[in-house]
Length: 407
Length: 228
Ligand SMILES: Nc1ncnc2c1ncn2[C@@H]1O[C@H](COP(=O)(O)OP(=O)(O)O)[C@@H](O)[C@H]1O
Ligand SMILES: [Mg+2]
Figure 1 (cartoon, rainbow over the protein chains, first blue to last red):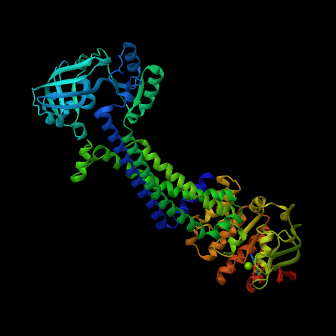
Figure 2 (cartoon, rainbow over the protein chains, first blue to last red; figure 1 turned 90 degrees about the horizontal axis):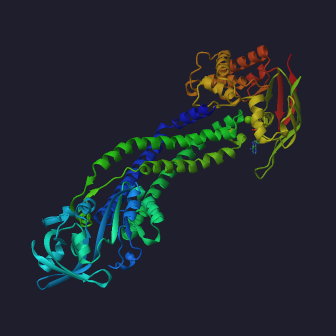
Figure 3 (cartoon, each protein chain N blue to C red; figure 1 turned 30 degrees about the vertical axis):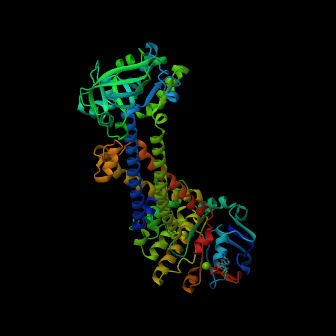
């Protein structure tokens, strides 16, 4: 009986081909639109996250428990063998990049400026942040380099040229005074205007010497293989490292980006909500008409002995089938579409492109193909159909056969 | 043997302001194999009476026994099952399922009864052949004339092997030739297979075919005569 109910439902939905096609088309376009929107959001978010992560923070960082609050040169830690073993033992951790960073005064001639001094492992740092890529003049640091890289605005303010020697003064570890001379090796021009004002880079070893903090770091920056591994990695490390270290994820370190994404997601939900409410009403009115115009027929079916629940099942299938046809058609179109857009993002031009560049993003609309991009639509349409099919169900259960027959 | 026994049956409609006494204290017994017409002018209570006989409507008063079953004691969910296994229905017009072919319409009832595919197939074809539509089994109702549709409806009514067939004005929408054909088929089924038919009509030509004529007026039986 089950498949004959399905057969009946299938034939019923095509009785008014035009109306069903219009309803199916509304679901079809809704699914495509909503899929593209979700895909675009996902693509943009992961690009934004990638940016934050690859420009600076990595996905996860390990610090001294007080460091994030104090940012003090006294809150350092030694990446001991046992610590490194635990971290590299987590199979989801990809790279471990050490840094030593603090504030320093930089002088050249009569000019003095404050800025961030960051000690890095040049090849590793380059792998994460592509630091070498932003060298606009001079050269990137060698692993045992004595030189310094400086952000372009800072270099301009100090009026230094490649090869000039810059004097740095700061406070070292546990009250030591820190001072040193560094020849300017390269000038950095970042796509973020803010970053062009204060960043300077020397090798990690030079920084340790400078701050009198041998073997120490301010942070270990970790990358993970997959974005989904971020929280599991954090939890694993927190569990095994205990209270002696703090483990922070990119969004804890950069709540602004996180909030931007959340806010945008919220807007997206509202827009998709409106879209699907419109579609839902379309399906609903079709279902209302489908029942109203065959009241007598439904009455006959119950009169000759068809159980109301069985009949309700037929009507439920009808609503469901309209939804399914729309979703499947929408899928068939949006899967290749999204796939194509993921592989070739839509390039942006003009002012919009400039805004993107200011935020350090390549000027293009990115798309994501996370499975939820597609499954989400299926679930939503399924939920709408379920909701709409309450109507025929209640109509059937309240159907009065004799009245229906007289109509 | 009596297939149906009706005692003191009444129906009062009181959903509107004025109460309508559609059926008033009918007593009646129908025997197996009878070919009965319920006649009377429009509004005399034919449909109301047949609906109660068929378990489609609840009487206000009185009782209906079909075989061993007191129909008026059944709950509405039991009534659906009762109708499926005991009564064949033919309605005035457009009572086939439009998306099913003639054969599928006939099979529909047997499918509800849970009959096997082979049995359904065989019986549907033999019933459609009996009503003279052996060559139209795969036609949808919209491809059949009104008379042919009513013949399919008769085949469907018989498919469940019911105790009797109720037909409420089955010829009201038919031209005289189709009316004649349909009545001839019903009569032959009655004669050759002893099928009990109860049909309502206000068409004199149809009345002439009946072997028992029950006349209603204002919800009461005013005449009940059997022809030889
Ligand atoms: N659902 C109803 N509510 C109120 N009055 C009804 C209803 N159905 C039928 N009637 C009334 O009951 C009487 C008998 O109707 P009906 O059984 O349809 O007669 P017939 O089939 O002989 O034309 C009529 O007066 C009709 O108006
Ligand atoms: Mg009537």
